[in-house]
Amino acid sequence: MRILSWNINGLATTLQYYPWSETKSYKNLLDTLEADIICLQEIKTQRQKLTRDMGLVPGYDGYFSYSKTKQGYSGVAIYAKKPLTPLSTDERITADLSPTFLDTLKTTHHELLDLEGRCLIMDFGLFVLFNIYFPNDSGDTRMDFKMDYHRCARQRIDSLLEQGRQVILVGDVNAVHEEIDHCDPKQSLKEHGITDFKDLPHRQWVDQLLTPNGPMVDTGRRSHPNRKGMFTCWNTRINARPANFGTRIDYVLISQGLLPFFNVADIRADILGSDHCPVYADFWDTLPDNKDTRLIDLLSTNSSASIPSSPYLAANYPEFNQKKLMTFFNNPTAGSPPITNTATSIISSQSPSPSVSSLSSSSSSSTSTSPSITLKRKNTTMTLGNKRQQQQQKPQQNTLKSFFSSNSNSNKQNKSKIRNNINANRLNKIDDNDINATIDMEPILSQIKERKETNQVWSDLFQPPTIPKCQVHKSTCNEYTVSKKGPNQGRRFYLCSKPVGPQDVNSLDYRCDFFQWKHDKKSE
Image (tube, rainbow, N blue to C red; front, side):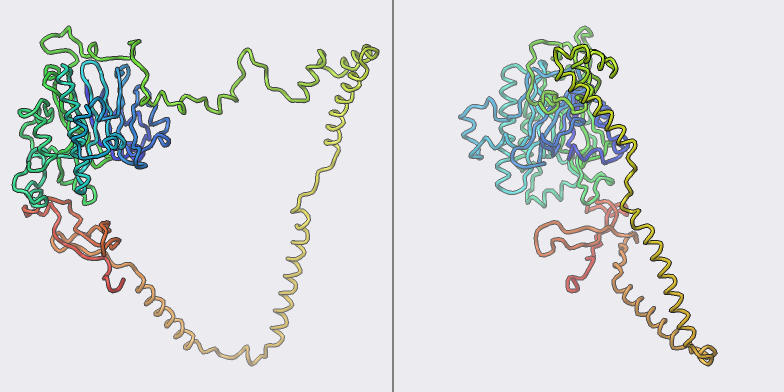
């Protein structure tokens, strides 16, 4: 069994990237990941924008949590391959935490921690799965929010372990554990103004959670303890992925009681479509020392009648269970009357005979009983017949265009005659001396040349500037735009097109320090 985690950076936009763009299928996307439980973070969608293709993927059950504070922000999802079904599902990281602990948080209204759609917690019987998109550390006030979220997650994990339960934590932790997990640890020390790499609260939190200090095992490092460059996130704005200049902030962590089931873990750097790549952990289908113990038998499946329906399951959304309008126009069922013409249905309902002649004979025999009804039937039938005859005999009405077609042709002929007369009058007024006169072409050609030169000057003036080449690699630069707020916001500039690399390494494979504004600020 495989459990996979991926910060997808927008569920709705992922299919725009290769190779998903060729099929535009979410089933193809999930099948390519080759996992039994697929945990996604940062789906950036809302329930009203979740399509049937996203929520109802054949072969999978999709569970979703959305942000309640911002539209198209955060959000997590879990796709469980059938028949796997959780015993319970929750999106609240603060659930089951004591009021005493909640009072220690710096976030005054701790309910805000549950409103950004950052968590899905599922109980699969053998283990409790946490799929979390942890907050980042942008801003001092946001750092308090981030660390409060980390503390709540740790409290939930410790509480479950004390109850004898096993835990799996997956997701974007937004924290680097060791220096080996960072592409440029020296630059990180400089940017944060620290001398110890772990001298940051969120890095200390990870260090205290993992063995040997804590109860959880980093499956990636257990399988590859000394592997360098095992990064899971890259800055796409500076094209850092081609040079593998990134960080490792995505994890699959398991409690030590699950180690007998653990096989191997790794990353899927070949999967594109986001600024993150998937990470996964594989578990044995049967225990290596006990082949009779199957993992699937220890997990909850939809064969159990005690499994409750989850409000986070997309298949339970009322909008996905409504009948389509097309179903109302399908062939009628056996017990429903067929749809017929209104006039025909009225006649057939009042008379057992389908023909007009039989209708007349029956009406004459029953004149004494109901003459008014019989007369009405005759009039209705004859009226319908008369209308059809009148429609067949009535000549077709001319179109509006037919009233103008003949006039249009005559107008063209009149215009042609007038034009010929004008030309003839002009020729009669020209003298023979004028016809034989020689035209001086030199001034005319001079004027044409001056016009061309003037037009070329104006054309060159409004031509976009030539893209420069960097001085080291002599290659065409890439254009960027300043997004940071300030006096230069919106200005465009050029940088070397090579991927970003370590600053203390002199290599032609990495970006040089070339920089140039696209336009001079004074001219702008």
